[in-house]
Amino acid sequence: MLCPVCDVEMLVLEHEDIEIDCCYECAGIWLDEGELELLSGKDGKPSAVAAALAKDADVKGKGKRPCPVCSKKMLLADIKLPSGKLVEIDKCPKGHGMWFDKGELDDIVAAAGGGGAVVDFLASLFNADGDGNSEDS
Image (cartoon, rainbow, N blue to C red; front, side, top):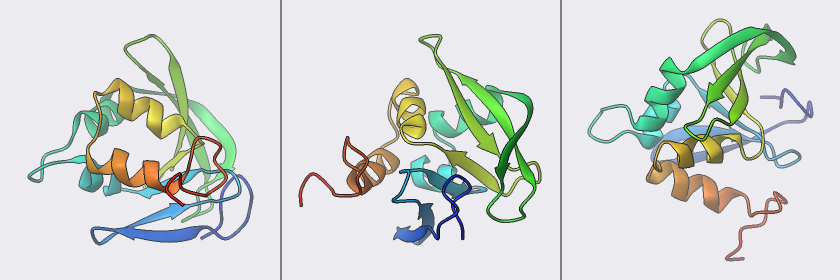
């Protein structure tokens, strides 16, 4: 799958039988439909993160980036965090998934009070510099 920003092949990482597509060039993350809920939910229930993404996204129109699944131009959606900060994400118009630029998913997860497994796993993927080297290495 190609990164919608860099147009390079993304790495497919697996966590608890969930495949996450990550770009080591730009530190972006693609989550297929339902993957965020699986990563962050407990007992099959959506987490606060998934709930925030589902209800608080204010779609602004089409962006320039293609969906890595269907190649349709993704929709730009603003997520308003409790702090008032807006985080702009890209969503496939056909519902294939969501694209998070570097730091966007972190901001959403932090605003929703954390996400358990999603925070731990994604934090291990990229260090603060986004160069792809974990801090433990």
